[in-house]
Image (cartoon, rainbow, N blue to C red; front, side):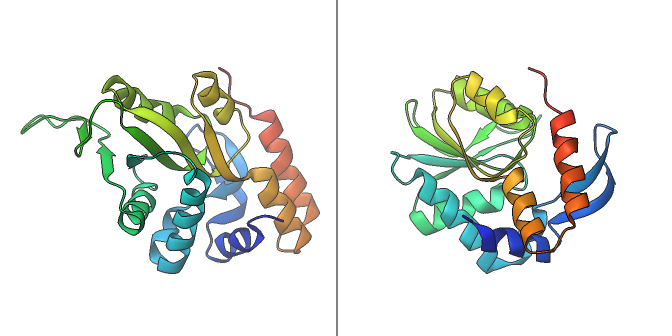
Length: 201
């Protein structure tokens, strides 16, 4: 399976967990994905960054931008290794100084690679795209690590933007079930949760 080793590593460092987890929405999920710990594993961070970059290497990219906050270290890694200028889209506008929402130098028409860790509803990606697009940047592609398959990718692509995930949540469940790291019961329960919790758009 493609990216099987990556799935194993993410499970080993606790970025993929099974159990009972209350989500921000208030819904209780039988699994939880938290990719923030990858910043403590330099080689893993480098590997993920390189895999995401490879997916966009055939495109002409002028700028790279990470969706705050988990994707920022990944975007930084890509910027430094491949000498691609980075942009930073603030979560909120400062009430002082330049009051800019987008930090960094760019020109209208520059092609930007957007980086995100997980796509669920697609809301955070679309909220990041909006000011970039309004400023004249072209979103060449959205590179993500995991597509949770809850409709977010479809919502983004419906707006005319291409999304390129390294893996789907189904890939994750299949690999962990195959290696015995997760029971068939827990994997199937997680899969049913995904099927019953689709994003409406």
